[in-house]
Image (tube, rainbow, N blue to C red):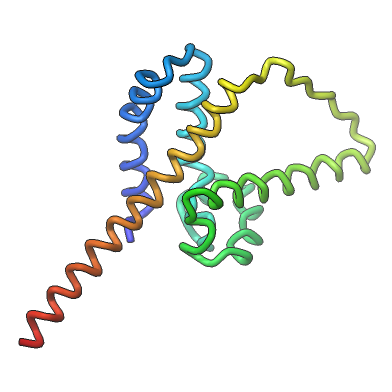
Length: 165
């Protein structure tokens, strides 16, 4: 299985290639391409599928807030559903939404006045850019895991066959 540094390197090298492809095929504006790249980068660094491990570089990047991922790693076993191409990012986004929601609720109960958010500027192009950044980062991580695992198991089988002759 690739190390956290290998994943980060691979995902960061893929970013300009994927951003170029995103720009070439979808012809987004500067706001969409910036959101795509930002979502991809933040997902690579902070919302890695490896948050299901108790110790990993993504959790360390959260600094003192890394503890919020402890329950997540208890609920999800490593390389299980959190490494799913479709459901994996949703598990982390829903989990993070629940954590933020609980914090906001706690602040409200404590009497802290919170500003009302207005998101009238959000449109389908921005949501597509956000989703593409999140999902492509996840896909790069999972595909690297699967590729390395495939080559290791293939190599292991070849060695086992050569020893048995």
